[in-house]
Image 1 (cartoon, rainbow, N blue to C red):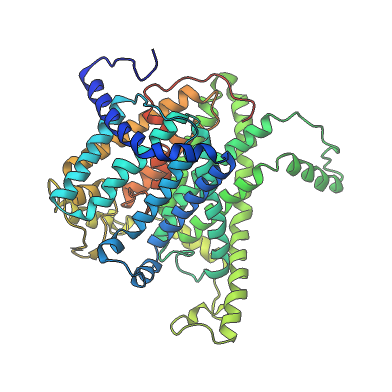
Image 2: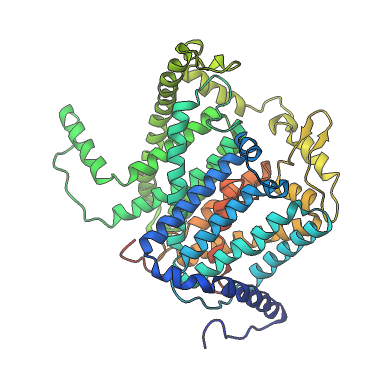
Length: 524
C-alpha cells in the first residue's frame, strides 16, 4: 500500500485528504500538457531557468519598492485593471516557469499533512471570501496563495529533493544580490543619512537584508560541511611567530584550503555593513535572532554528545571567520561605495549631467566619514528616554489606527490618516494588515499556519539534520520573517524577498510524514 492510498484515520484527516485530492486533480490536469516538455529538457537547462526565474522575481520585488513601477505602468498600453496587478501577473508567470521546470518525472497524487492542509485551505478560502465580499483588490493574493504556491509544493512533494529547490532559490537570490551590490556601489552614495542603496528608503533595504543574512549563513554552513569532507592536508610551512615571512605563506595556505567560505563570508560581511549604514533596527534584530538560532541548532543541538570543549572549539573555529569578515567588510564596503560613486558622480558633476535638485550627489560636497556612519548607527540603537512609539518609529500609533478599523471581512485597498503621524499606506505589521485588509478569519488562519509551519520546520530539522545538509534552511528563515512581519506588512511573496523564500520553504512541511535521515549523502 503506497502513501497516498493509505486510509486516513479521522474526520479531519479525511477532510484534508479530500481538499488535497481536489487541488491535486486540478494541478494534474493543468500540468499534464507540460510533463512531456519538461522531461525532454535537460536538468541543466531546467535548473538555470528556475534560478533565472527567482532572479526575475527579485527584480520585480525590487521594482515594487521604487518609483520605477509607476513610470513603467504609465507607458504600458494596458487596461487599468491589468496595470493594477501587472507585477503580480509577472510573478505568477515566472512561478509557472519554476513549476514546469521543476517537473522531473510522472506526477502522482501525494498525501499531505492534515493540519497544514486544513489551515492553508482555511486561509485561502477567507482570502477569496474577502476578495468577493469586500474588494477584488485581494483577488491577486488569493490566486497566489490558493493556486501558485500549492502547485509548486505539489511538484516538489513528488520530487522530494528539496535541497535542490533550496539551492536553486539561493542561487537566484545570491546572483541578484551580487548585481544589486555592484550597482549600489556605483550609483548609491553614502550621504550622511540612513543608507538606502538602490531603494527609495532605508526601510526597504533593511527588509531586503533580513533575507540575505540567512541565505549566506546557509551557504556558509554548507561550505563548512564540504570542507569537513576533504582529506586533511599538512601545511607546507609552520606558523612561526618569530618569522613574519611564514605568516603570509601560512595564511595563503589556510585561505586556499577554505576557499569555499570566501563567497558566503563576503556576502555576510557586506550584508552586515549595509545594515550598519542603513541603521535598520529591523534587519539588525532579524540578523541577531537568526545568528542565535543558527548557533543553537548548528552547534549545541547538532553536536550535543561531543562535550562542551568540542562544541566550543568548533564554534570558535566557525564564528571567528565571520567576525573577521564583518570587521573587514564594514570599512571595506564603506570605501568601496565612496570610491565607486565618486567616479560616477564626479564625472556627472563636472560635465553638468546631474539633474536639478540632485546637486547634493556631487562627491566634492560630501564629507561623510566611516566613524560618523558607525556612530549614527549606534545612536539609533539607543532607546534611553524614548517612548515605545519613538523606538518603533511611530508604529504603535499606526497599529492602533488600523486595529480600530478592523472589519470581519476586511476593507478595500487604501491609505488611512493616523493622528499625530499623517497618512499611512500600510499597517507595518502582517497580522494587523491582514486583519484590516481581509478580515478576522483570514488573519486567524494566517497566524495558525505560521505557528504550525514553525513547529513543522523544527520537526523537519530534528528528523533530517543528520542526512540532509539543507534541513536547517526552513527553520533558519523563520526569525527573519517573524521579525519583519512584526514591523512591516511583509506577507505578499512578490513584494518582499523574505516572504518569497519563506513561503517557498514551506514545500517539505506539507509532507504527510517527515522521514528521518541518519546519514549524509556523499555528494553533499
